[in-house]
Length: 160
Image 1 (cartoon, one colour):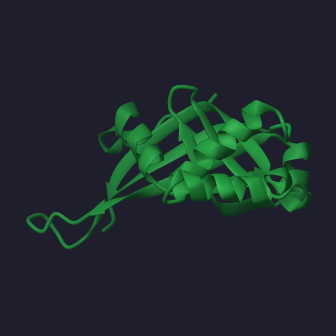
Image 2: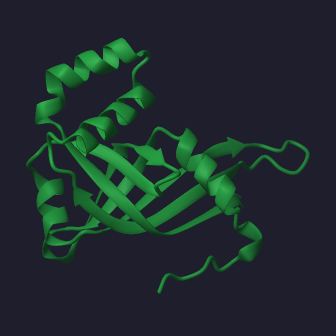
């Protein structure tokens, strides 16, 4: 169903792919947009390794919500860990992870949604008190989204 990485020499293992998902702060979410056009946007996210899910937040209404209600199939991409090996070349190595999955809107209010919002906030806020303050102020207006991962692949390439 999902195509394998063509150049196996560039493939990174699952642990390296998950480490990249854990460490990055932003990725690109691609959805099936209006009139057959793709719709891709940068988002902040939280990766739950144990549950094999990705969480992000947004408004309760808008283009993203409308698009996901029409089709729950998404692609999510992160890239990073750029490094230059001076002994080999001037061109950097970079890693990327591509995730395919299904995205659903979490119901606002139940403990699950609040728990996920807290996990998400702790990734971005410097301390728990500030995260709790923001959740108390904006939590009810925040929509949480959950991507269930169906396929994940990662690779490292030298960009030259």
